[in-house]
Each structure stands twice: as C-alpha cells, then as structure tokens.
Length: 68
Image 1 (cartoon, rainbow, N blue to C red):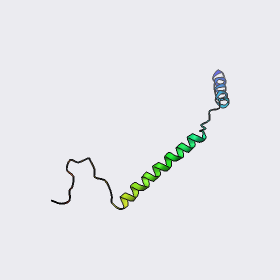
Image 2: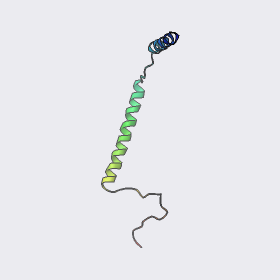
Image 3: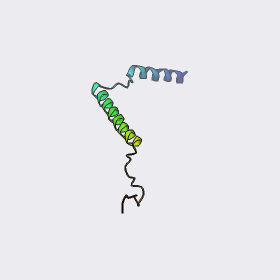
Image 4: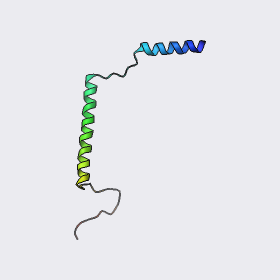
C-alpha cells in the first residue's frame, strides 16, 4: 500500500511539475536552419556522387596520378 502511495505521489508530481519539452521560437528557427543546412550539404554530396566528383581519399599513401 505504501509503495502504491509513493507511486501515485510521484506520478502526480511529474504531472503537475510540467515536464514538457517545449522549445522557444528562436530554438525552433535555429533547429530548422541546421536541418536545412545539413540537407543542402547532403544534396551537394549526392550530386557529386552522381557525377563521380568524389574527392581523393587520404586513407592511402599512394594516390593515383594522371600523366607522367
């Protein structure tokens, strides 16, 4: 019975405490700008992938070179 009372009081405190995940207008605007920026950079990378404009990788010591 005591644990039920504690559980009830805890849930009541959480409900009345206002545990909401609200963001301000500025935070929402900043989040949307970050999402848009990320999507634009991903679109550019996808376009480069389609046209095979990949950058040289720095993972190998010997890079392929064109010419003599």
